[in-house]
Amino acid sequence: MTARIKPLTGEPLAGPREVTPASMAADRRKFFARLEELGIASVTVEHEPVFTVEQSRALRETIPGAHTKNLFLADRDGRVALVVAKDDARVDLKRVASRLGFGRLSFGKPELLGTMLGITPGSVTPFALINDREARVRVVVDEALLGFGEINCHPLENTATTRLAAGDLISFIRACGHEPSIFPLS
Image (cartoon, rainbow, N blue to C red; front, top):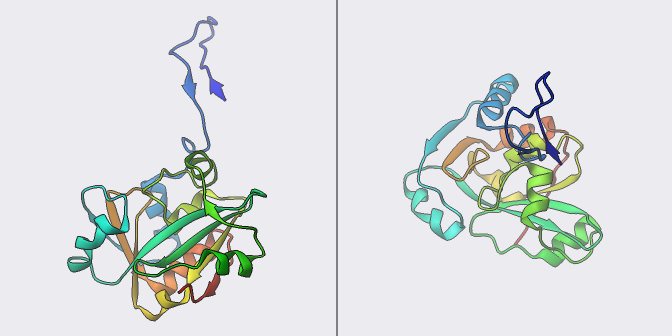
């Protein structure tokens, strides 16, 4: 939808502005405020943008804790899942689909990602669940992650990494209205 802001004279103040769920989504400031509100301690490290697990491998040496790969997936019926896995996990998508009762899963389209989670490809993160107020996205967390004291994820943008306690990640997901399915992914 396009919104035009008009002054009392009836003339537009500026050109059309695209209003999308992504443009109305929580930003990093709101995300960090929510962590504080929940009493969740975190540490964030700024870095160059990383779009893939391969590109982020160098961060392992400088940022302690488990690193993640996050998959935004959809089936043909429009059901959507966010899979939060250890960065080196081999995720069996057939197993995930079966456990969730979904059809064959494939990567969700960027437009759907923006609409549902308010983020762009390369920035997929469980922290984006803050934007899924209707809890439409099913969440799967790799059981292996919970064996680590701390977990690292992007704070809605791929130019930083935020580390928090593993239990706090689960608490955050629940505070966003989602009950994660937790099971081994590989």
